[in-house]
Length: 354
Image (cartoon, rainbow, N blue to C red; front, side):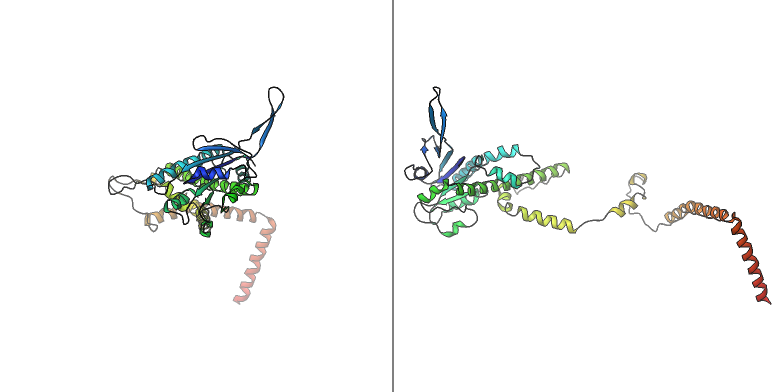
């Protein structure tokens, strides 16, 4: 089964966790520890080893970790935001550890996704959100804020949840009672949740890689944009808002950008070849206090200088043609043919004149 790391958020979390880990009712849980603050550990198997006397000894595996955060219904918005901040810091702690190990320029791949979704992954497996029917505004805020970073399992102890909560933002695993919630420890359910958790980490990493690339490009070009609000304060880039709005459209935006770049291919090779013939700006001087305007291509002195520059190549061409003609005339057969042609032409001319 491997490591299982769960977070339970809502009202009455410890009661729900106690029912979920009930060894008399669960077929997978074999041992449950004691509460250590807001964390409890359980086991789905035993470890067999020998003690100092060579006798067999069994210890609980303690491969299940459940962390709870109690959230009341009447809490203010700022308290809810504090809970969201605490939860994101907890969930993204293994994100940072894994990101530091991976190469910054490494692209997502199937091999990486399989490693991250293995039974020994350090990622949190899922977050169980205890909700009412219908969910409150605070519960909806928790759902929309945390769904980009962790699989969320909505669970209600009162009535069965409506099918609207099976839409994007929650995990496909939707237990409607405590017994169904215990199926979370089945291998097929764990594989589903771990794959979803790995996918969310890869999306989170792509967002941060894109932001880091933009910041590097901005620093290299020495350009910075400063936006000031009415009070004269600087308004910075809101990473949380950007991540929430553009996380699901990142791949689409990249595809559109690549499509535009493939259809717009500027051709500048001919300009590069001819631009070497033009005088550089360093060789052009102007009187102090004046600015150079655009060069007139029909400027008469320029045309004259350009025509004179062609005389050199023309002279070499004429000399080369003359030398070739002299070389041809040096041949005896050519000279005989020319003399014969002149005589024949002279005779024909006399005949026509008579």
